[in-house]
Image (cartoon, rainbow over all chains, first blue to last red; front, side, top):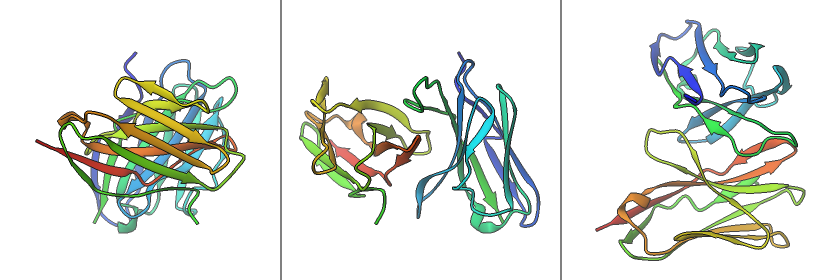
Amino acid sequence: DAGVIQSPRHEVTEMGQEVTLRCKPISGHDYLFWYRQTMMRGLELLIYFNNNVPIDDSGMPEDRFSAKMPNASFSTLKIQPSEPRDSAVYFCASCSGTGGPNTIYFGEGSWLTVV
Amino acid sequence: RKEVEQDPGPFNVPEGATVAFNCTYSNSASQSFFWYRQDCRKEPKLLMSVYSSGNEDGRFTAQLNRASQYISLLIRDSKLSDSATYLCVVLQGGKLIFGQGTELSVKP
């Protein structure tokens, strides 16, 4: 398996622009997570899905952030409008958890810079 | 108080040294525990799970003390390639909560 695939790997955008990050989880995994990592706050869970349904979005910073999972093999995280403080690495991760999330596998991350 | 707390380091040790990392968690109902390793500009990867009885994987030993809500990772005979950030991770209410990580730098 190719692992969790994220795109773009790097993005530099101007403040106010819409940013869309994409993720393809490992085939067969029924949990998908979006994390954000910064030096100041470390790795924070933004939202996670189970069987394509959002379970917990309490980590989503504000209404400018939205995430969707239209099917088992694709998810997006959208920021509109983007702000400089959104600059971070955004990781997508997935796992198979009959009893709940366990060992999760991360993608290589999307490195976002908002100027 | 953070849900998962770690000493951020950095820990600078010579090759061959033994180094120990500690982690505390705030929620006594936490279910499972892990150590992840993250190399610079890379994604976190599972290093090992942590079991109540303690477990060992080669040079790495993990311990869990539920009463004290404390997790540890011991690295023996450290190698240059062990240089990375080590993340303590707790499964809590169906969510994996990550500590900020402890940076390790192993020097020749």
